[in-house]
Image (cartoon, rainbow, N blue to C red; front, side, top):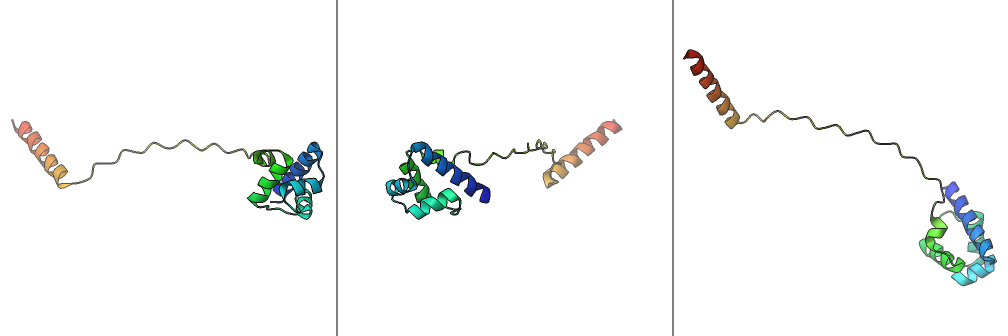
Length: 114
């Protein structure tokens, strides 16, 4: 979580400085406290509310995605092994199958006798 807080704090500070605003101006525009803006920039507020992030983005003149997208490098996902094909199941032993087997056996015996 510390990596995320550091990445977010760096992003907020960079966006604020790029827009030429002070922490106080950002706070006033977003109806936030100066203390909160400072804590966010210092990484001391690790888990801000969604409403705070929305207000912050609005005060900086950016979309919420600009604040949050690509904060951390994406993890490489291991490819999943190929799924095994299901094996054919033996037919269920039912009365119908048993009768059919007996009938076939009888037919084979009759042919053998002939």
